[in-house]
Image (cartoon, rainbow, N blue to C red; front, top):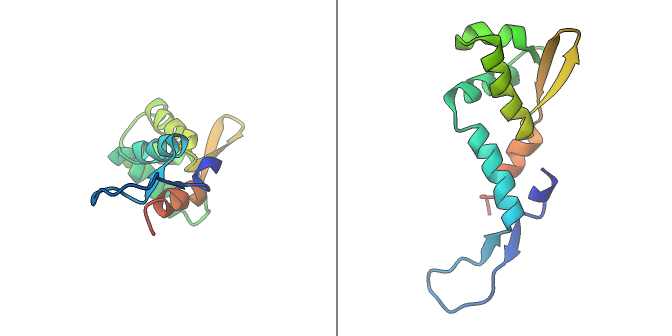
Length: 115
């Protein structure tokens, strides 16, 4: 998600009344889309909220399946997409995977649209 730091580049000067002063670079737009796409599924939003709200600051995949009513492989697939988007980190402990939030990706994505 490091490409989000240099989020906006200046657009060429034009005289149109409807042209924006700034345009997202293609790479930045792709990274932002990955974050928002990962959060575009209600199950992933629910999983993310559970992990963020965990008193331990992390959750085992074994504790994520029952609340969303999905099998462990399905939850693992959803979690893989959240990891790829940079929204959570995964740590393997024996046979179980633990996930903790990495709020940097979400914060950077939100900053891209706040002046």
